[in-house]
Amino acid sequence: MATKQTIEEGSEFIPKFDTNGLITAIAQDAKTGQILMAGYMNRAALDLTIQTGYATYFSRARQKLWKKGEESGHVQKVEQILVDCDQDCVVLKVTVEAGQCHTGYQSCFYRALKAGTAKELDFIAEKVYDPRKIYKK
Amino acid sequence: MATKQTIEEGSEFIPKFDTNGLITAIAQDAKTGQILMAGYMNRAALDLTIQTGYATYFSRARQKLWKKGEESGHVQKVEQILVDCDQDCVVLKVTVEAGQCHTGYQSCFYRALKAGTAKELDFIAEKVYDPRKIYKK
Image 1 (cartoon, helix red, strand yellow):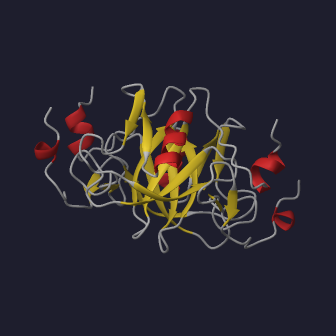
Image 2 (cartoon, one colour):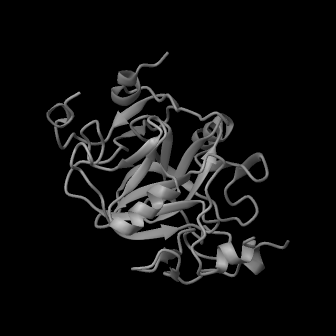
């Protein structure tokens, strides 16, 4: 059993999967620092990501492995994988060549809470591609 | 019931909490773009964050609200709250004046998987404060 000391101060990668077998994975543009998306990985997705150098997630909605870009071609080339103190979250530093959100935006985080409100969002980005031309269904 | 269209393309903030009543919250340094930590918020934590302008999370380990910095003083001043396409994750753009990880590092992500390995971590940062001087227990 890994100790708190080992997990937090050690140099062994011991990713902690939750009760559903998942770990949170955040994709961050390695060049710009922009956070592109947040997803989940199971053990197989994490292993595939490490082995192939391209991000593979686990889709909770579809309950299956999902190589990012398998349909759209908008893949994420993984430059570095960071892990946090308690090893229950990873950050993927990625290089991308196209918009990463299925809605057409570069990042999934294209809206921000309007200042002084609790319910209203401002759009803070423009679409960078037309998803209707990429996703046929 | 909010539709996919409303959630993804609308300007109403409709955060989606999971079966445990939590949403993932990522704190990112507003100046440098560095990802500082990932945590969780319940409805009360999110409301407090919006109302006070300082990040409050929900501690899963302690099952209670946790104002970031309540013990260490290392608070997060929230400049902007971004939400992703399906509204199940928020990014807090924060201003910080001190190391954010309880281990002494600026960011919780102070280790990276060593290139070409699957289990070995490199330390990629230096501690910016001594946690033994901050946390008394």
